[in-house]
Length: 329
Image (cartoon, rainbow, N blue to C red; front, side, top):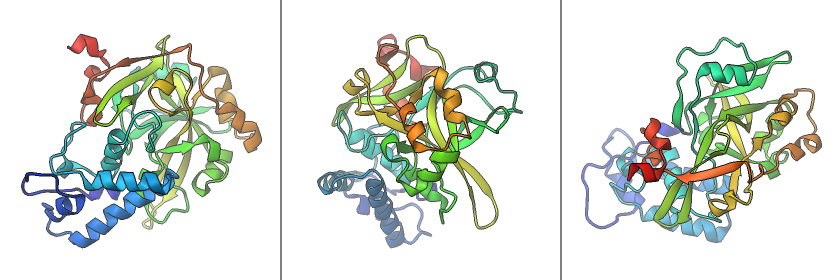
């Protein structure tokens, strides 16, 4: 798995050595260092290709990654603990702000009870006993999702990071955290799920970072009513070489509305409640009928407020993540 590539360092050094130096001081000597380095750079380049970045922007990201040092802690997790997907989050946060290249929906919350979820989506599925409210949902985790089985809504878990059924390796899922609404019908990974495997991903807020450079403020974005809303998603089921089946999902993004444009140029597709059933309808397979559902949500019913930078660390998953920053000072 991608997450098995852990960057380890024996010691902290002065200055800012490049990523290659950091990896070559790995605390895991059993790994072939050259292979790890090649794999990391391959994943970075694949990620940039997935984001359809220009050559100029790719150069800027490469230069940024080369500047990372051991112990780098801009979002609460030192470099020697970073996995490949976390590295992409650092690329996103540090190369961030309005108009940034690495635009993603990468964190959200679902803080309601399981009973509230079931009532909201009119589902009576045998739910997982381990469900609990989440204040900092991150890629790679199991997330709650709703699909329609042809008769009724079904509530269950999907892993965030879509793995196409035809994929040779599951690590491609970390490149499929989001899907751009504008190109769903053209991308091989999303074309078939767009037609036949659509889901709702319930949330009551999502996070994004406002600003550029190293001075970025995490923001919590939600409905003024504080109600649950549905992010449009796609899902697929992948089978490994040993026969293990893994169901995964991705969050669809669109251009930002007026309010969100002050924070980011992309936002998750939030479906109005009256359109949720149309999105889940398995009888609808035409992209021409589905595309009109993927519009930016109106600004007026939405609000945003600053929260603590602790949301940048996936280990923090408690009520302090959603506290307004003014109450924490």
